[in-house]
Amino acid sequence: MSDLLTELTEQEERLQFDRFDNDTALDLGEHLLRAARERGLPVTISVRRNGQRLFHAALAGTSADNDAWIDRKSRVVDRYGHSSMLVGATFHAAGGTFEQQSRLDPDRYAAHGGVFPVIVRGVGPIGTVGVSGLPQAEDHAFVVEQLTGFLAR
Image (cartoon, rainbow, N blue to C red; front, side):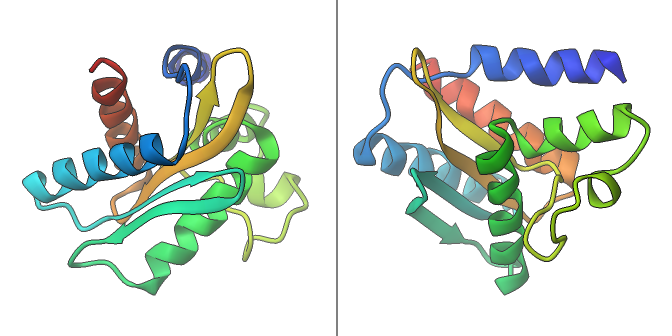
C-alpha cells in the first residue's frame, strides 16, 4: 500500500501548473474530451477553479449519476487538497475506509478515484479536474495520463 501512496503523492508533486485561468481550464477540458472521444469512453468530465465549474461535458453512456459522482469526489479534493484516489488510499492504509472514518456524509463525499487537484506551483490546490464513468482506478489513470500530456505541451 505504501507504494501506491508514494506513487499518488508523486503524481501531485509532478502534475502542477505554472498558472491556471479560465482559458487554461477550457483547453484542459477540451483536451480530456478529445481523448475520451477518441477512445469511445463513457465519461463525464469536469474542470473547476475556486468552486466554479468552468468545463463540463457528458459523453454517451453517462447519466446524472456521473455528475453526482464528480461532485462527491470533487468535494473530497476540495476538503483534503489531494486527489480523491489518494484520500481513499490513505484511509485504507490506516486500516479503515473513508466512509467509516471520515465522518462525512457519503451522499456528499466520495473518496473514489477520478478527481485530481488543480495545483498551481507556489500557490497550492485551486481547483479540480475529474472524470466519472469508468472503474475508479481507470478514472484516475485517465486523468493523470491526460494531465501529463497536457502539461508537456
